[in-house]
Length: 371
View 1: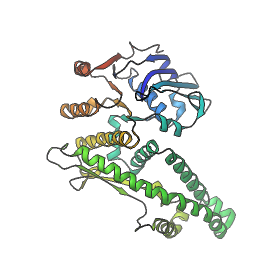
View 2: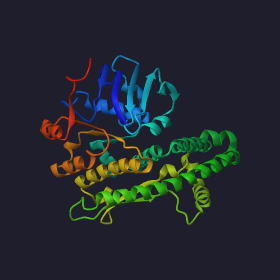
View 3: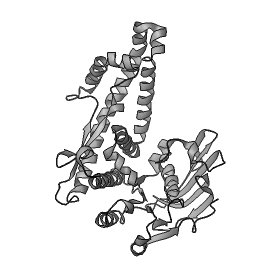
View 4: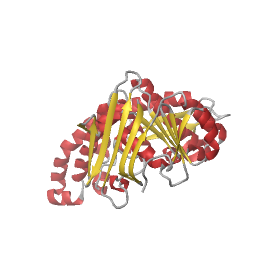
């Protein structure tokens, strides 16, 4: 799948943009603050329904406006099929259309595959488990359309269970009444959560195989990076549901004291190690940055090998954090893959990227109206 035309209205700094995209890779070149990353962000929205930078849709609207629109036309080089995607946010409501039909984020995730790279990806290694869970769930959603639905159902069940743990609910119903009201939601959390545990376990195993292969020899004197699943609940064999239910029973007093569910897939994590040393605690910044890059490359590989679609790669200022050897290794690894959009302010790479057949777009000079 390749993007052949991008259209923006009142998105970030762009009042109106109509950008045709010829065959090949694309270099977005311009100074910091010129709008390069905003273009990558718009393409990411078309592939996932959400921004890779902002958690609130309203901040994406151009200053002084209360709506925005991102649209794109895609072509599948394998069969010539064309697809149009349109995402509009207006008055706190977001509408998604695929080929003019009402759609959901899961439809975008199923039809259009994007993988983004940015200096902030180092958070995958350095920050809390929440960041790694979000990354793992994105891969799950890209590989399976029903993964997102299952995730939403689990989150709803957790919210309902948490409601029965709040002080106001317990005060109104009494502790016994609150426990009785909680039981069906506990059962629902266990039912969905147990399956989510198993799906994540299998997904991490596949991610680990790919990451191991990609990082073999990449860290000079070190071995490959190993990733392991760190579920909130440990189980043996096929006893995951019983183990999860026991864990919730054991944490009942703690949950009631805190007012929320403290155990479940929503507290899962991943462990990343280099030579049996946890990268989060003992890795250098360079090792952490490289590992994050290889995690994203693993995501792209899993999408391509699992469902036969080569994702669009969105690369933002990676030259600012990778040394020359690592940057050249990255380019050599991805240039034969699908369509690449690479944003940088570093003019020094212009000649080499032209040699690698990147189409050059100077931002903002070579794109339409920016107000």
